[in-house]
Image (cartoon, rainbow, N blue to C red):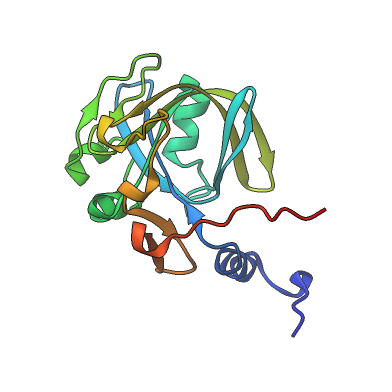
Length: 202
């Protein structure tokens, strides 16, 4: 079967793409507004795009009211944000922050997550997350109705017990959650990962 995307409306295209591009990591983004209101929201159009300079990308849409989502607006106004890792024990809190609350609502309070001061940006870390990346805005590109936000990673916080002896993150010690299509998620554990070394072919 072939599906010509020109025959679909934007909602159909979105559902098809998120069910085909799987699994997707979740950027649980924390920001602060110019009024000082804390915000947290998950986004799965998210990727690392460069390590020199260290740059990540998140893509954010608009609210049903056609206004920019709070995360997008805060990043535009403040120029800083934090990406927090989502583990299985945090999925309920993450899911609460996916609700489109009014701008004056503090999602940290709603989800009962703890703000922790960052080192190099004003946006807070989510204290319960084992990995937090402090970012400053590198560039924002508007594609259709989406804001594609590139952020330079300035500083990374990692819980000590998930570092290996080389100083890297041992993801087998975490139960990482990924996004699939619809309301479906996946869980990455040590038991369902495997190693695959490059073949030595001449």
